[in-house]
Length: 216
Image (tube, rainbow, N blue to C red; front, side, top):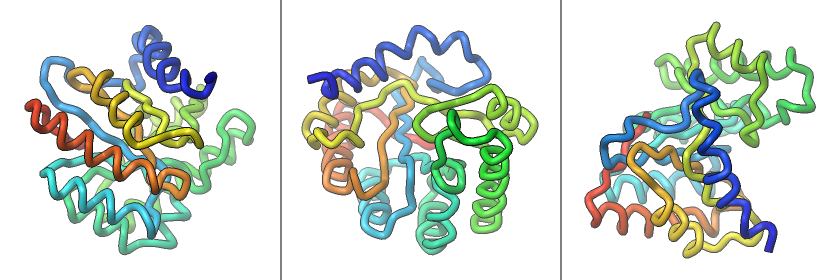
């Protein structure tokens, strides 16, 4: 029961606090019916291409926050994301916990991942999302110094929960999204049986209602 409330708390409970962190990106332009889908934790052999195929089928663009070690292991998928016109962001090298890891280690991971991704795509990396959404003051300083915007979210449907179901994830996004919403979804083994099915419903339903999907 408590887990079922996590998407509501992580979405509606966070929205009032967005204004206190203006250096962090929570929502895009609020006057257009555009949704900004984001996918954390990839690239993965089982999931990334499925997500790319679904996005292509609906003419949608998105942003992928990649783990540096996964990018090193699967450079072909990083290339596929980039060549499909999607945006790529930094999600640290190993998905460490920023609240328990030494901040020097966090900064090293952020810098190393930036180098890995920029070398692979041949373009600057301008966005970063902290693992688990756990941001710190030193991370915010690092972003300011490196010209990377820390990206959080406006809608968190909880596709990573063990209790998640595709229909519930899709319904939550469809019912909660608002113009400019940044939506967090995941590209990892825990979500590979949930997120693609939910994404297909989200793209079809919101697309039919006149919404567009764009990268940041």
